[in-house]
Amino acid sequence: MKYKVLGFPLDKPKLRVLCFHNAGSAESIYTGPKTPFIDWVKETKQVEVMAFDYPGRDKLLKATKHTTTETLAPELLGVAYEKLTDGVPYIVWGHSVGTWVGFEFLMHARKIGLPMPLAAFFVTFPAPHWPETKRPWRRNAKLNDAEMKKEVLNWDSTHFGGAGKVVFEEPTWKETWEPMMRADFKLFDEYKFKHAGTPKFDFPLHCWWCEGEHFIKGEMVQAWKDWTSSEFDYQVLKDTGHLTAFYQAELKKAYFTKVTDLMKKYAGL
Image 1 (cartoon, helix red, strand yellow):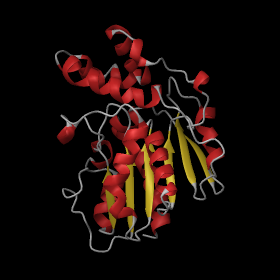
Image 2 (cartoon, one colour; image 1 turned 180 degrees about the vertical axis):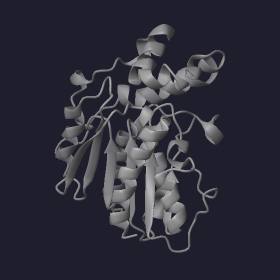
Image 3 (cartoon, helix red, strand yellow; image 1 turned 90 degrees about the vertical axis):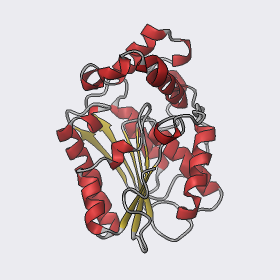
Image 4 (cartoon, one colour; image 1 turned 60 degrees about the vertical axis):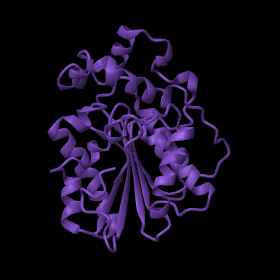
């Protein structure tokens, strides 16, 4: 995570934000400069951001990639453990499969008695208990190269048919993007929900759906309401795709503004 680069740790932060990225991505989708979120963080000087990089990318490029949340979530919890025990309130923000990574992270944290967040933002992905038989994507393990490229494209054809099409260029597709995508896609392809009967969280959930989704439907995101006994906030990000939410400037600005405005209320800043 880009922790020291952003000026952290702070002496006495009033809030900490833990960010969990989507498949094929990295912490930079959250920490990139000149967004409403990072601008607010820099202005207040009272908010820390812990945006994780999953092993297998950036400075962890040579690290073994995780293909299951059962190993990834505990590893991330180990990294964050010290920060979850120092009394600073925190918020969780996950996008796409980052929602399931964040969910499992919180399940592990609760199991060992760690404090829960003030709220969680779980954006544009099905609730974790959504039936496997109703998952609309194809599992990538048996897809050939052409089929895998099509599956990636379908997640956001506007992005991957435009600026994002560089991922399909050789030799970087074979060397970097395909191995990363296949590993990351397994996080949701092979995810097994094992929490039936587990108590709901007692903090608010903000679970939003991107209107331009191909695979994800609104009702899949609305099913997150089953996971909180507190406020449930479902909204639609208009004209926004699964990844254009991060890669088209105006859509990212609108998305990050909505998240940041709510974080300000939780933080009292």
